[in-house]
Length: 400
Image 1 (tube, rainbow, N blue to C red):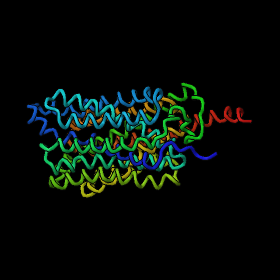
Image 2: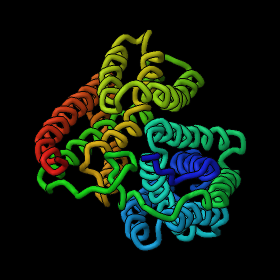
Image 3: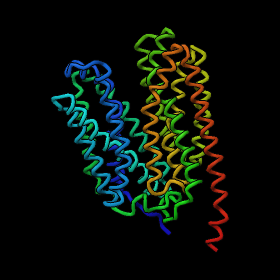
Image 4: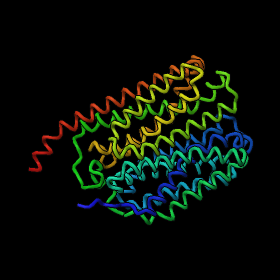
């Protein structure tokens, strides 16, 4: 039976363009905080609320998109998500008051959450055997956006944040223009994702599904803890080691770029390496890289290496989740939503730990969370394998 294709080449390009916009939305608020403070007369804490409310919108967007998807199909739901990103970014760029800017951030977040989850699901089931490769490429495009927005902000200056968000809106609407390349149905919720789009299947029993889904949530919570911890605290750590501010800033940008590179490398490796082994191997490499941060002369290179190993974990973990047979319907979206909550809370917990012990505790803190990520990945591997073996006799008896 030939593989079902749910996405044309133009549709894939449009989705990847939207993923660049989604990544840029995630990183555009930080550089704009000084301008928010000055333009709207805000305290620093209040000026940082833009990203916070956008994150809330993103979680809601992941969950709401599943309801719209069931009712209206792929093309409509992804198109609406792209439109929400574009409209929200325009609102942030042009808002005359702070409440209107926050409203725009929520709208953009709704679109971001919908695009992130739906495009990932569609790429897994819509590209057949090329799905794992395409998921890595889509999330590498997301990573490019997270790098591009701060670089653009550096060029325009904080006061030019409106141009950055305007550019994000243009990218979102460019993706929307190509949304016709998506087949309306079947939706990922109507396809057995464990077969890569090859058919439909009944949902597995609730108990095993919850155990496997819970293990993936734990993996992502730990993974985001390392990612956000390094991304937020690497500059301070390197400054305390005596590096110039320019080196600290460049090294932090290099960390994010290394994540993008890791995803492009994974796009090639996943053709010959199972996603589960790629995730566990990346987690093991992450532990080794973070251990090197205890040696100050190696710190910059170690953190670049950490970015390289972090990159493949999220997209390949989602592909792995899809192959377990426990992520059909809306369950896949629930894992992404829970992970987004974790990514919002992780920097707070990491910052509190370093505030109590000082930035000298950075290597130990990062290594501990990296080791927990590796432990979670191994536990997920064993649990998913156990559940698969448990289901196998029943599946065979029904096919005779």
